[in-house]
Structures are given as structure tokens and as C-alpha cells.
Length: 291
Image 1 (cartoon, rainbow, N blue to C red):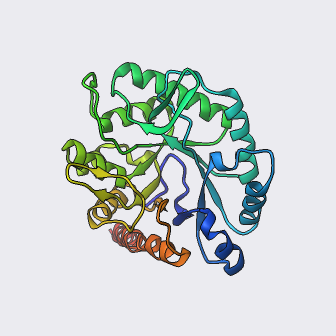
Image 2: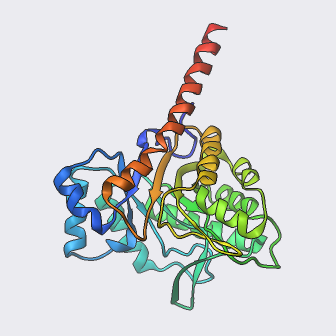
Image 3: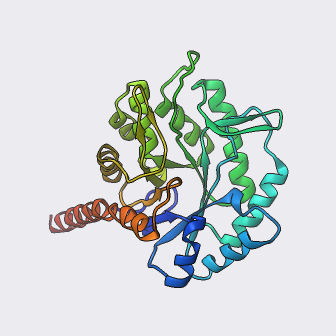
């Protein structure tokens, strides 16, 4: 299958989130990893140990930046100092694209440090898409927005979440970081079919996919990232890969973090789905050539 129209980074394979408990293992054992995802805000500093460790990682591995505080959906104007530091970091890491969340989380300069769901309205589409476009133009690299997990909905919404996501990325002309775990969690909390979501979004804009574990409580699911990926999420991932083709995939494991080997082994399970897609694409290519 050809590279998608958005970024063409189909050779990135399987990545792992770079976490402090694994620094020692990575730098001494040099495991074979396609790439690491780093949280941008952890390295937007002028110096010190974080940047020193990041530079050592960059000497050996490809890195992709992922943000957690851009808040594209907030009514506040973009923070110019934040963008300046972010751009400096993108130059340092040479990240091929940058991702952040389709959410809000700040009011009048006060930050909640949470990824809050948005009202899916046409006004929100307009404001959010304009912010994404401004960030992408300023950073001069592709931007991919990530769908978040949610536990509440707004009565004023005028469309579904997947329609909202699609409208934003089309107007902003940006990519999608499709988090299939978040889709599954939200679908169970809000009673919609997650397969409809995956089939609706523009596949050619999916630059990256997230997989992760979640926890089940009595009335809802919670996006906890603290254990292996569950079977329903793997099923949804398989559906996404069939639609989008070979796509850079990142395993998130952010709490109760086990050994590097365990996290790596869980991430590599995604290879079986990527291999099936590649095999099917090659078979189709051969059959078309024989006609």
C-alpha cells in the first residue's frame, strides 16, 4: 500500500514512549527500536539533565515529539513563548512531525493539566482548525492532532466526535494521530460503535496510531496506560491498519511502568498486524500486475 498523502512516514514501524525508568537500559543495552516518542514539555528547557539525556538518545535513535499542553480547543490565544521553545526543540530533535491533542485545558492563562473534551460545534471547528494551522505554519513541520478519551459530553454538540475531528483536520490541512484505545474507551463510555469512528476518519491523514491499556470500572472505562493492550483495542487497531496501511504505531505505557523488555515485547505485538497488511498489499500488487 502506498504511503498516505499526509506524511509518507510509513517506514517508522513500531515506537515506544521514552520514559525515565528506561534510560539506563536504553543507553547501556542499545535495544533495537524503530523510534522513541518524547513528551515535548519534558525537554522544553534551556539545559540540564533532561536535554543531556535526550541528546544521548538522539545520537542512536529517531525521535518523534508528542505534546500534552497545546490545547488547540481552548479559547485562549496561542502562547508565543511556548511555541518559540517548541520550535527550538523540533530543530534539536529533527522530529518529522509533531502531535498534540484535540482538546481544551486552559482558561485565561490558567492550565488544568488535563485533556478535556470539547463541544462538537461548528464554531469550535473554526477556532480549533485556525489554531492548528497557525501552529503548523509556525513550526514548519506537519502537525497531527490526537483524539482524546472522554467521560462527559456536551448537550450543545452539533455533530459526532469523528465528524468533528474530520472537519478540523480538513480545514487545518493537518494529520491525525489516531488513538484507537481512546476511541474504544469513549465508545464504551458514550455508547457508540468504535468501528464507525475508524471507518469515518480520512485514512490518508492518519500519520500515527496510539495503542495502550485501559481499566474497567463499574460504570465506565478509564484510559490508564498502566497495563498491556486489551483484545478489543487490538481488534480496532487491526481495522485501522487495514484502512490506513502501514502506519507509525506507538505503545503508551505511563503508569506502573514495567521493565523495558516487557514494554518492548508488548509494542512488537503490533508487527503481526502490520505484516498482514503488507502481505495483502503485495498480493494485490502481484495480482494487478498479472492482469
